[in-house]
Amino acid sequence: MLFIMVYDVVIVGAGPGGSTLARLLDEKYKVLLIDKRNLGSYTDNNKEKCCGGLLAPDAQNMLAKLGLGIPQEVLTGPQMFSVNSIDFDNNIERYYQRHYININREKFDRWLVSLIPNSVELCFNSLYKSYKKVDDYIEVKLNKDGENIIVKTKILVGADGAISRVREQTFEHKKSPDKYVSIQHWYKTKKEMPYYTSIFDKEITDFYSWLIQKEDSILIGTAIPIKEDANEKFQLLISKLKKQGIDIGEAEKKSGTLIMRTRKIRQINSIKDNVVLIGEAAGFISPSSAEGISYALKSGSILAKCINEQHYDFGKKYNKKTRSLKTNIIFKNLKSILMYNKTIRRWIMKSRILSMNIDWDI
Ligand SMILES: Cc1cc2nc3c(=O)[nH]c(=O)nc-3n(C[C@H](O)[C@H](O)[C@H](O)COP(=O)(O)OP(=O)(O)OC[C@H]3O[C@@H](n4cnc5c(N)ncnc54)[C@H](O)[C@@H]3O)c2cc1C
Image 1: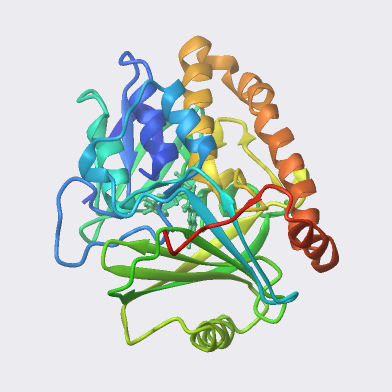
Image 2: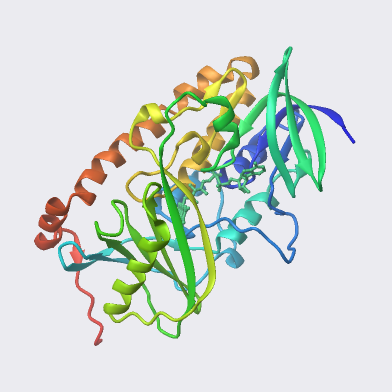
């Protein structure tokens, strides 16, 4: 059966970017928010976003600017105040003070969705398929419970993350960010690991790998350039960690997805006519740390402001106001040069600049 409904804004993706936009759009607009996940209720086959679930200072800053504080149930333990950097290339280990907030990512997404006003129509368990322009409208095709539905909208927003179909269909001839395959496995642990561990090893990846404790589990993840054999590299990481003395048993949960690494500003594409991208779909993600939540929150809130202020000229404004995000990504690329060059990193870590000593015996 085919239903035709008409909206002002259709948003594909209810991650931090899409749900922030949906929450902040003026209630005078008729808004539809689509997600293939069921973020309204829990089901047996919940699809969870594969993520480390750390809120970096930039994300904390954005939440503060949005007037939001995180409810207790979104937090997970332990809260960590340091990073353990292990450099396998240079055989050096250092601790640095950092202020991350450890969260349950699934609960974080659901909490953001719970803040969306009732005026927004939520369409979960629904897969966005394609769109086409018809006169002054955009016809959006989606599939809900095996049924194809077509809706019409004036503005289509792709907030559909790294594997963005909206991006693919809108900017097929444009450069997209470098693609990495990210693998994350969960292992039961009895040990306390009250720090976030980042691992640098050129044999595994030119990006980095990580360990994060989540209650009684340890999450081990890495991001591998798409042309490499990600499974083989992940196994290499596990064997190196075991040699380090880290106790790793059978994985209790396995996940994987793509992650974008925006190396050049021309890889960011965010607007074509009335089709707009926000968050990771646009390429807004840190190329040095893979931190993407702050960019999703920020681009979502900027777009809401632009649409609310001036409906028909919002694209130009959005482009202008997201320049600060692009500049930030340029800086993060410069930071990457320092972080991912073996010789520079060796020099920095050896110098002990900004590092700290942890006295485990106290
Ligand atoms: C392994 C890993 C670890 C990470 N760790 C961190 C971290 O610790 N901290 C951090 O800040 N960032 C982290 N990131 C990056 C961060 O997760 C993303 O950049 C951020 O979630 C982007 O938000 P978004 O709203 O743009 O997209 P997403 O959060 O990816 O949301 C996209 C939404 O669109 C939906 N969707 C996609 N396609 C369709 C479709 N065709 N139809 C319907 N719905 C669709 C998805 O279900 C999803 O809900 C990590 C990423 C990975 C892969």
